[in-house]
Image (cartoon, rainbow, N blue to C red; front, side, top):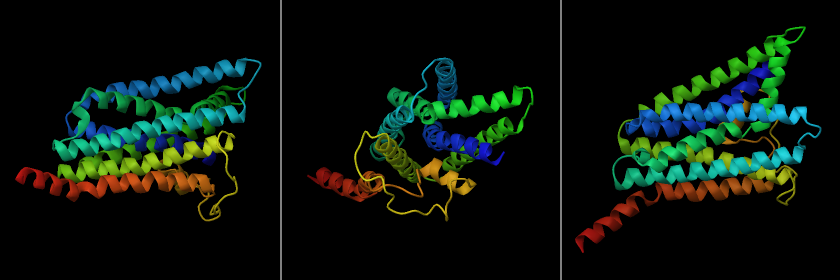
Length: 276
């Protein structure tokens, strides 16, 4: 049951850490109606991959590991792009209007799309795992433990995401709330982006040495709750390649500088322009 629980936990956390901050911004600005389309998008995406996995399983040809890697990598890069747009939209709205961007229809669309993609990152792998757990529970020698482990893991991830949602809403002034949420999403986006690049590198789309820069698997194994939590939320890898580490820094450092450094600079420029 431990393995299935960890799988469910990773699935719940990877989606929840994206959805919770985006919905927190929507809630802070009065757009509570976004919850329903987000839940529909999440359910529809997972149902799509379940059906797709069933179709592929009944066919004569199965997708190769390389194909799955390319699919996951492309979805990760798309999700990172949406998250990055949301990060700067939140930051821009907080600086220039004093409230978040959730009043704009485009933000609502990005939230729904990002929610769907965050579920789709595991794609066929998640669907295949769940189908196997259901078959184990409904077979001749019914074993409910795998399915129970997945359900408990996903539920735990959902509870953590809900706690994150409420915790973000408790942040005091709007300036700190929107800035903090944008920074959190930037770190999450960096992890999604670097994991996408890593998947494409192992699928032989990108070049580069596949030898890990370091290996801390013995200290932070992925078959533990904390290892799975780090991997699912911030894209941590205990044995990353040089390309994965490089793109993480190339994403994280400029984005955080743009989010944090220009705050005072923008005000001073604005003040100088007003005096003129």
